[in-house]
Length: 100
Image 1 (cartoon, rainbow, N blue to C red):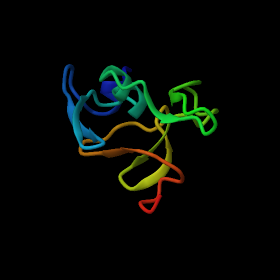
Image 2 (image 1 turned 180 degrees about the vertical axis):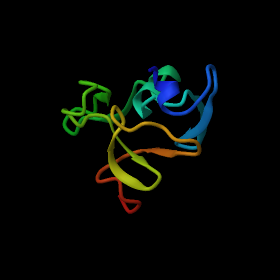
Image 3 (image 1 turned 90 degrees about the horizontal axis):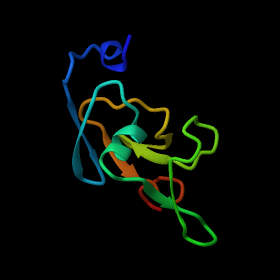
């Protein structure tokens, strides 16, 4: 079964999520990282010491470089979280709490 079938979507169906306020079209069953990458967003964090851009590094949930806040929940690994219609995804800075 392909990811769309697993998500209960027909061929070519899309859903909408937002990333830092920007609406993005997504295919059901895709991860947050896949949706961001397809939209041309390849980095959304930076290293502490040098400020170098970071995004998806390992793609398997091991390195924690792709952390985002999804629907108010911080520390979500973008490479593992499947998108849902209406998801609000934000760049995470610090711990991901609103006071950071």
